[in-house]
Structure formats: C-alpha cells, structure tokens
Length: 404
Image 1: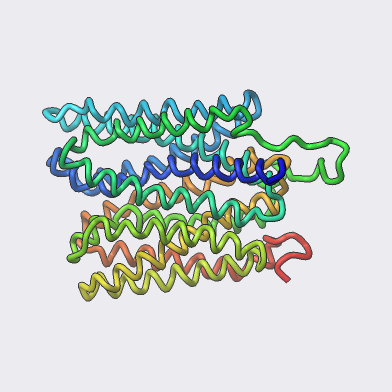
Image 2 (image 1 turned 90 degrees about the vertical axis):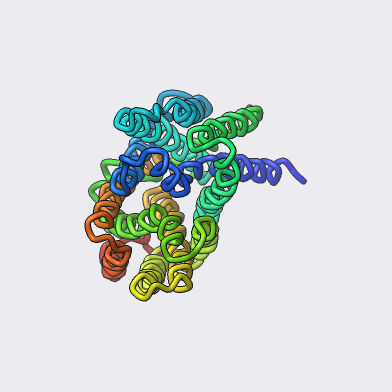
C-alpha cells in the first residue's frame, strides 16, 4: 500500500471514528421514559424542548468550530469538542432526585450548553478536515461520515439499555463520557490526524470558492437551506419520538432505534448517488421518500399498526440521512472548498431553525394526546420540501454543467 492510499484510509478511519462519538446525543430518545420515571414532575413537552433546543447549541458549536479553526489548529479545536462533551455527560450523575426543578435546569445546561455545543464543534472540525481530502467523492465521504453518526446511535442505544438496569439513568451518561475521551485520545495519538490538506497557492483553482458573505447572497444557498430545514425537522421529530411511539403501539424501543442504521444507509448511499446524479435529483428523491414515510406513519398511528409505523421510521430515517449528507456535500461542491469550514458552519443555521420547529412537537403531543398529529407535522414538512425541490434548477443549486 503506497503512502497516498494509506493516508486516505487513515483519514477516513479517523473521521469515521470521530463521527461515531457524535451519535451519543441521540440516546436522549432512549432516556426519555427512564427520566420521566425518575422525575414524575417532568413531561413529554419538557423533554422535547431539551431535545429540540440542544440542536440550537449543536448549531452554535458548529459556528464556533468554524471560528476557532481560523485561529488555532484543528487538533486543538477537536479537544474543544471532547472535553466539554464529556464534562456535560458526567454531570448527569449529580442530578438531585429530590429537586426536579433544579434537576431539569441542570439537565438543560449539561446536555445543551456543554455536550451539544461540544459535539457541534467536533462536527465542524471533522467535516472540514475530512471532506476536502476527497474532491471527487464529496458526497460519498460525507455520506460515510453521516452513516457513522447514525450507526453510533444504535450502538450507544444498545449499550445504554443494557446499563440502565444496573447503573440507572444518572449513571449511564458518565460511561458515555469515558468512551468519548478514550476514542478522542486514540485519534489524537496520530499527530497528523484532524488536519485539512494544504493547498498550493500556485495550483490552478487554489483561489476558488465563495466567501460566507457571497454564499449568503446566493438564491441557491437559501433554497438549499429551506429544503434542508424541512427534511431535517421531519427527521428530528422521528428521532425524538421513535422509541416512545414504538412502545406506545406495541413495539420495542430498541426496534425503533433501527431508524439510525436506516439513517446511516441513506447517508452513504444517497451521498454516493449525488456524486453521479447531482444534487437536484437527490433533493427531489429525498423529499419524495420522506413524504412516503410520513404517509406510512400517519396510517400506522391512525390505525394502530406498528408494522406501518416501523416501515415509516425506516424510510424516514433513510431520507433524513440522505438529505443530511447531500446537503453538507452540496455546500462544498456549490461554493468551493477554500472557505468550507466557515461556509459549513454558516450553512448549519438550518439545524438551528429545525431545532426550533422540532421543539414544538412535544407540546403538540401533550395537547392532542395523539401521535397522529405529530406525524401530520412530518407530512406537511415533507410536502414543503418536495415543492422546494421543484425550484432547484431555477435557483441555480448546481454548478453549470452539473445535474444535466
């Protein structure tokens, strides 16, 4: 194996290992019922609020990661992920059971301010130092990274379910913190890890790429953002309610978490397909798949069919994963790699908007008492994404010569 191939393999392995850690956030879906049992004064709306708002902090972390990468080395920025994220998870061990109000405030700070912000920083530095190494396969590499993120949620969920009866909900999170610290240390043992490729200033195209302010003036950027907001919100709603919804309709919480490998499969397969088919076709396909999933979920919740719900979760997870990986790659392809770290950070305002929209789903469930109303939200968002995809050509989402 020559040096170039070995370097490429190591880059991918280290990027995948890092992304495996970011899925630790999704265990919140598994922890919902144990937290409600531990703190009976809490309700579904309160938990959905934390899950929704934590995505705002992930978005803020991604923005912060982009700023930090301009001033300090990417390896040091990676430490700014590992330390706060693990600290936030360790703090759950100290939640006071006899003071549910204080515990809720602490859970919010620990999960959102520390863990979610740290994960956001990590997402930015790993994406911006991995994808640029593979200019001709941006979609496939982005998909592989998001696949690792999706798969990790299943691995963490399985681990958490085994540990919950032994350690309780407050004892599980420090175990996840230890895993984050251990894997992060192993990645950083390679002194060349988490480093973007060096550009030769004299090379053709070295100056190519739009600055964030130029990207923000582009209609293509805003169409991509709105499309991603719709599908990301729909996906977050499914992730938030998958476990509790499956349990309510006669299934198992862990079975519902198979949405994560479906998410991962969608990430890598749709990302790779984007390299061949272009972003415009992928936008339409992902939106239609989410619409199909939403119809199955509405049918399942309306008729009480877990089979339909399970199928809808799998298809919805696939569409969500595909929209995430293709969105990240399309920002790099459409606006260049020179300022990708900053552009990727700015583009993730979609995550913040989606978090605000998703946080309302728990309130809708509390007020209506019906998962059907929540799944109708998913259907509306999927239909909106389908309409937006029809205007992708007019907005110039693809570069000239692409998507023909």
